[in-house]
Amino acid sequence: MYLLCCQHCAMEVGVGIWVKSKDEWIQASIRHVKKDDAGDGAHVDITYEYARGGVESRQVDVAKVEDGTDDTVKLANSADMDLVDDLIRLPNLHEPGICHTLNERFKQNDIYTLTGEILLAVNPFQDLGIYSDKLIRTYIRHGMLQALGDEESTVPPHVFGVADTAFRSLTAPLTGRPQNQSILVSGESGAGKTETTKFIMKYLAAVSQSQSMCNININQSDVMSQVLSSSPILEAFGNARTIRNDNSSRFGKFIQMQFSSHRGLLIGAGIQTYLLETVRVTSQAPKERNYHIFYELLAGLDDDRKTKWGLTYPPAYFYYLNQSDCVVRKDGVSDKDQFECLREAFDTMQFDDQDQHNVLYTLANVLHVGNLRFHAPPHNVHHEEGSMLASSDPTSAAAELHVTAFFGVDRHALEVALTTRKIQARDEWYTLGLLPEVAEQHRDALARYVYGKLFEYLVGRINSTIDHDGDGDLAGFIGVLDIFGFEDLSTNSFEQLCINYANETLQHHFNATVLRQEQVTYERERIQWSFINFPDNQPCLDLLEKKPMGLFHMLDEECIVPQGSDENFARKATKRHTTKTLDLACPSSFFGASHADRANHIFAIHHYAGW
Image (cartoon, rainbow, N blue to C red; front, side):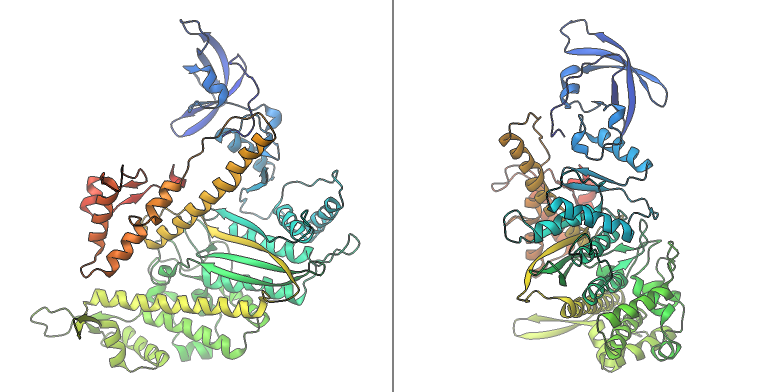
């Protein structure tokens, strides 16, 4: 894309270019140029040498290369632009140019690069020592100088700089009155979103306590300690080891850091959470773990409660922890040590001993729910649908005792709840038995529901301690949105669809507020530039949410019809979005279903990130 016009650069010997070979951009230098036989100069034959060796030739359209519309050849930037700290300064702003600059800066341990007001971060997966208290003071001092009008003070791009800009915009706005600010932290799994969010929170807490350059105070106050203590609790219950990340957040969160109108002091915070991946409680992909808290519980709980709650076994004893053969973290973090950190965070957040006891007891029984087993009733000569608890299985029998005690029901009530379902026909209700595999699905649904409610309870308790939204001295907030990016797993469920839908909405907002507004600014200021015809993902959003044929609305309908099923939903969705109808002028290009997919009742959605 081009935000600034390219400098005139003819196809000449010695000019650097990027050549796309398959799916890779390779740097090269032109060694020979020959005009085509027509002699109009519009097309030339070039011979170029790759930086890593090898010579090739091809014909190119000079105008397309120079205006950036050629899909296979791009003009390279000069070597003196390799380490530029703001990508907007690149004369040729395109994919290979951006990636090359980011890579060259990364080699110098410069992991942060600006592109206008947007900060790009490349995760180094190591401690570079760039988040010290000394550096926090440096950025606080820089922010104070800029607020006083000192334009000569400069600091390198850093997440602290983004946080400081948000703080100054809230507490010393140009408009004369405080305006709420928001920082979006987005990226794929393993990009470093969770750690970045914590660095932002730490900086905002520190800068709010510093009133002058002679009084920069980064020591933790009681409010600061409570706000920052929310992270260990949320990470224990909402983070897990995945293939790509040992501490992956499996939920999204919006944290409102609340500041007073008196000197901009941090007075509290509010947390909203989204899209907790509850399916992870009952099943995990190979080489992935369940949520950290289960392993921390088994590693750190005292022996007396382990014995009383039936937790004296290793993780492999529990069905919800033994499906992936993955028990330990790869990053060297101790589950036992993390359990102690969790207990300290609970204390800071004013969870008393009984509160903590109830939370941990609930977790123990979620594990026992997973060990419940079912089998078909004996002497079922008519092969009727039905199942019963497998009390002859010692593991299941032990789990029954704990689960019935926890829910306050007897064995019969538990069995009826998990192995039957009720349907209404006219004015009468009928009870139908469930096959063992269906009963297991009911069991897992119960475990996911309990864990989800426990997570909601924890977030509510945290907010009740630190949220000051109704405070009369509240000037406003700085919101930090931390949400995982687009997901494409080996098996994609409804949760992946919801996650990707959220990201489609964020991407659409980004297109509207950043790219379009930037172009409007250039037009208003009469800056020469090349128009960006960036992809618009509104049709994808329409496919998901537009009434009446959006997939979510079709799914709602399928859930309430008497004979609704997965197969019928897939069949209707495929027919609706791949066939021309009166209300659908042409099939959606974002919806895909091959002949094999249709036979298996599945379909694909082509998201923005997959273009």
